[in-house]
Image (tube, rainbow, N blue to C red; front, side):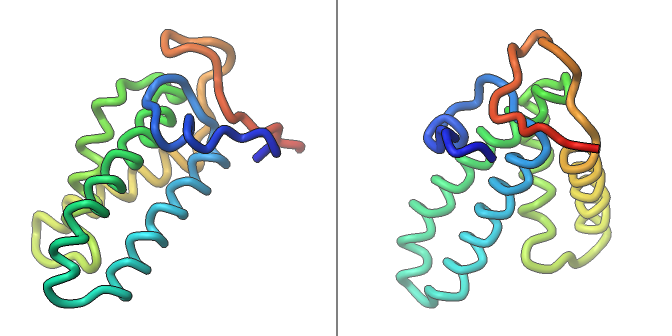
Length: 135
């Protein structure tokens, strides 16, 4: 990521586009944050603080996912399907529906972390936070 990354724009706005590397870093930060929160808080405080924490993480995840989906030329509404699948398989999948959700998560990882975005401008605007890949 370049040194002028606007973190507020990255995590709190669903408009625009982002590339693979910033998306992967932002997703990892959010997943590690949830894992640290879940390991640090137990009991009643987890429920009370969880409402705030999970709401904030859900909002930020939606914004980051929507930007990456926009970069791939898809509607940001697909973020709802991906987030539901992540919730179903977190922390460990169990049962048939979790298996299906795991397939959705696997598809999302391949599609959003590995596949390149659309070249040039698309209907969602210019790419924000794009890093130059050297071959």
